[in-house]
Length: 374
Image (cartoon, rainbow, N blue to C red; front, side, top):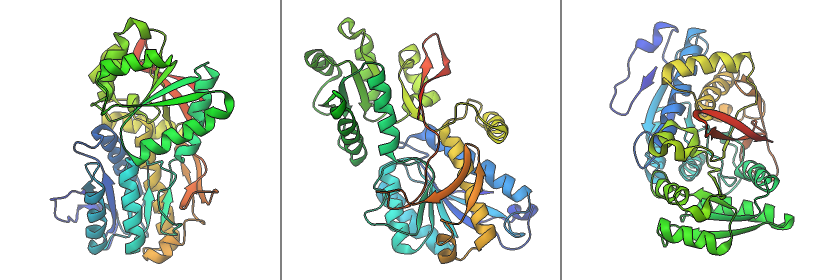
């Protein structure tokens, strides 16, 4: 069952389990300027898994209940939501898509002593210092973006431009790309979307002789106008446009750009071929969403499934739950999940979810093509 911001607690979650529900805080971007499509997919995966947990007996006879809060991609709002949820007595907090927001959530969860299972954010430095309270399913940005850089170099795209905005996430991504391609003969030039109009950005791409442009900027502004400008500029007909953060995965990208939104490679965290569990969950998510589920929807389902295993094995005490991260294992939609401490990562990390570079087929934009895996 889901409890929203203005919804009082309900007893309907006890249909499948006895006793007081186990409440779990869920943080998702559901309004602008958050990526609403990602939030919708994430919540669909979380909710589907909660219903399956409750249908199978809940947590030792108690229903699991989601208490949902909209972050709207606002770190301050998200941190305040952690405080509120901690006061409501949730056993743990899950979710979030935006890395900068998840970073604020992780920091606040660490201070409040609330276990946080991060679903989708990838920023390597999710916390300033190592913490026992936070675990994460999504692969670290440094891993995924290196795989993306390998794809670019393998495609002969060595002169890379990034259209960027000020953000710790975009800055981190640019650094990963530069550090990875420079020893291999590649270059990365930064173009400030706050200082350049889309037309001026096109001129800069020509001046730099760029062979690839990566959109490290917000959607729909300024990403959509930049794509339209580049696609309509005959000087840039051979330029590869890329979006490693995954924007083209979602239907609203295609809705905004149509055919211009196809052929833009992005990162997503899915296997080349789903197993039986992934097939089943994907079918149910597709029915719920009315469209192809993104990797974010699968991350939501996996999040609740892992947390349910931890709750069943270690109970609802917050300290005991946080202490369970290195011991919990679960069968996720994308493979077996367990947490370790990879070098340079300050949280408990699934190392690693499958990673692929994909795009929308220009001949059939509703169809995805897998271009590279890592």
